[in-house]
Amino acid sequence: MRTIWAGLLFIGMSTLVSGCWDIKSLQDVNYFTGIGIDYVDNKYHVYVQQLDFASVAKTEGGKSEVPSPVWVGHAKGDSLSEAIIELYQTTQQTVFWGHLNSIVLTENLLKHGDLLGVFDSLIRYPEIRYTPWIFGTKQGIKELFTTKPFFNLSPINSILYAPETNYNQRPIIAPMRLSQFIRELREPGQTVFLPSLGISAKTWDRDDKPDPKLEINGIFAMHNLKYGNWLSYEQLLGMRWLVEKAAGSRLILKQGDQVLAELRLAKPKSKVHIVIVGGEPVFNVEVEIAAAVIELWKMKTQKEFEQIANKHIVDQIKSTHQTGLKSNVDLLDLEHLLYRKKFKLWDKLTSGGKVTLKPSNLGEVKVTVKIDQSGMYKLQRKMTPY
Image (cartoon, rainbow, N blue to C red):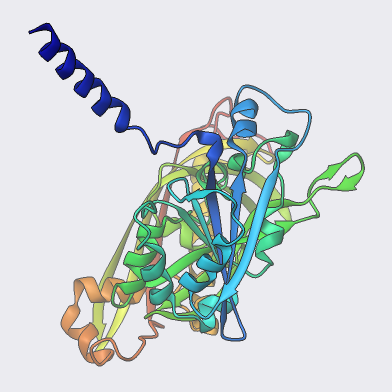
């Protein structure tokens, strides 16, 4: 009997041991964290970034004395899969795609490449999710992947992998996940605003030498799977008032060249009413925003500040709309609203989505700013101007 039990115990232990025979240690795997895709001379160029997770772990507890090492691989092929297979030839170890957290597409790819084919090929890798951040760029991908953040920290701490941190402080262009990009790219009548990733060498110096840093410098607009145009963030200031978000935007109030105050505006609530005039849609916009005074240079009443803020925001919305018309881009995404609210009219005007609608009829734009926090400033009583 003892022999039987000993045999069963040996078989059980052997099963447990054999279940881990092919396990790999962390140091025996290459972790691809970022991928960039370019399209040049009918070839797909793939750039991958991989990090040393040992150095990443060290920098989480504090700043390192030496920069975190970054490896950038590059290969090309007639298809995305062919380029990746070519890349595998020199990876040395097993590749794991489960930590992929950033995708960068060049302007050439957006203009001339087969986007749906690229994503169909990419997401067939079972380890890749729909959650990576996605960007477009006008710059070289290798430059982007080798631009380091501050204090020798890992690239994990940069805009490339954590764009929401930057957006919460300066909410103009919202970051985008891969799932959102693919969904909006296929959505009838919708314009996709893909964040544009660039490099700024003008803002920061290190030891009196330029220290380049990543920045979100604009958008690539796409409609019906086609490339539209690139626009800088300065041209998009009116877009933020039609997007409900928790983060607060700042607005400097001016009269002529004179700065009056600075407001922090949060959680705008917008409505777009569509009326039909002569068979054409007219879009009337209403926006309500709560505001707080964060800086005051010239004293005025609360009502006066609110009226000035109303005009500033109305001007920004109209200016952004006009910029879109000149660039053939629906920056306020009005066509998609027509598709959602008045489908039959949209279907008629666009021939079932085959023709791009140019929503030029922006009607009344009504903005109501309510200052509910003035801090130490007593705006309720009129004070003597400086």
